[in-house]
Picture 1 (tube, rainbow, N blue to C red):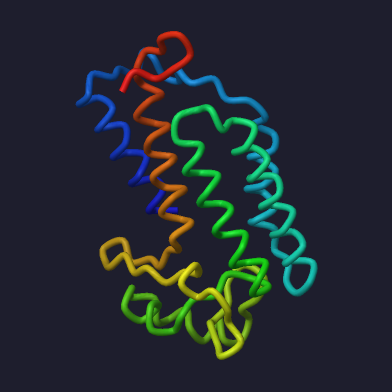
Picture 2: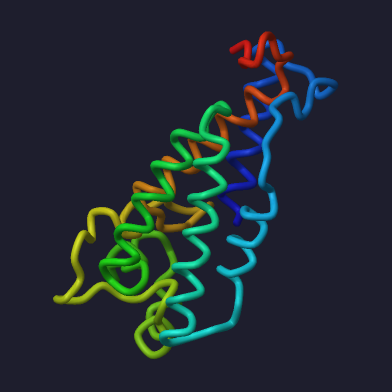
Length: 178
């Protein structure tokens, strides 16, 4: 959560430095917000096992639909691609794999026992059965942020940043001026 807030703040600063203004926010019309809200809510349900996995699958279906329906908006091609990459690795592994070493390097070693004992549909420790780990949570963002993200997450963050930068610029003939 800390990382997405930093991405949004940085994007707004870049948007202002490139001539944007908050008076234009939001200049990008997006539709189907209920899909995005539903997708996010499903990711926070306290479910485990198969119910948790199917809630995660439903979440990605809703989020992918939201991104696809808004694909012409600035950044949404990256958001869609990032969500798709995450969905592929999650579906292939029955959850998002994360390597023990990356948790240690990111300063999150304290989460390893819980993931080992309770990991499940959303995140679990990678093991010998893990496939496509390169698409899993394998990129370390060191302290002070201290998180592990996936290639898909980075695409989503870049897409969100692009969207926020564009959203504080005036719109001309349906396109962002950046």
